[in-house]
Length: 390
Figure 1 (cartoon, rainbow, N blue to C red):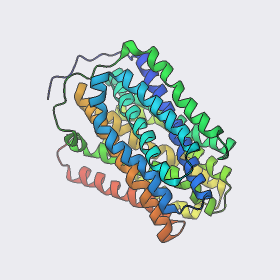
Figure 2: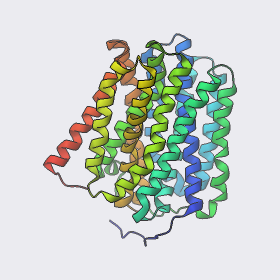
Figure 3: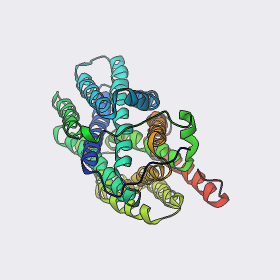
Figure 4: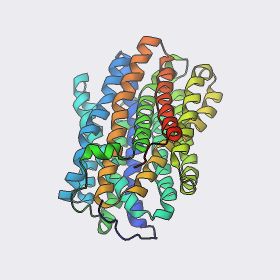
């Protein structure tokens, strides 16, 4: 592996602000878009399985876009690629309003989430290069907090304006476009990707398996939950607004937890234990959900803590990558990280949608529990048997 670049101990604030702006747009777009589109399809009488299939197009798009991102950015620079992705995401977000036929939503999902994936990969690479190693957990905690604010703001906007008319689509598209301003202002901090990476793309998927598996589980739970929780809440007796507010509580938990999680990650040597703990909390919360969902206040409190803990899978896994890799290796590893997140986005909504059709409404919770149980088994295996670490 090539020699890492010289370590800088200061935080690059313009780069941090630009990357945070991009991820804020991503968070709001996903937090508003997934429940909004699912509710519109539910009102049209589309089945849970078909809603899940359409939502899973996000994963298909990300799987295609993630390996190509560093190639494109190496050719056009990181800043230019991010601005082009912002334009594509904003135009496609507005396109959903004008697309009446269901089949049209499939290519729109691919364009929208492909652009979002490019923003994800490059903002994470940029922020990892802007963070000194001794404060990486803190910086990524700030980054994840802002992403979570976006996820929380999306359902909040949805709960206020509802799903009728063009307004929610205009808001989503406008927020995405605004992210281009700080990115262009920080263009002098444009991070160089450099030469080609040391390994093939798929090698990076398995280089740090505990981290990539963590983000796979997070992607499955997050995308499946955002897409189908509003449907689950409606079917268990809540109004559209009440279901959206429960989603907001989950996002608020992410906001409150991520900086403390980042600080803890800076102090812990073996982050696999912390990742395993988050998965266990996710498993317990999922199994308890069918027994709590009929009490809105109790559900809100549980989802606050559950959502914050689960999001730690993303933050701690990303910090681990930044510690292990540098330069073009880090850019490719970030792409692999988002690729695994995309796999989760592909598998999660479809699995949860089918589970709800087969096992009834509470199949939503059982499917979530299944994902967390898989990761608990993986982390316990690696901790107890101690296989070689990347």
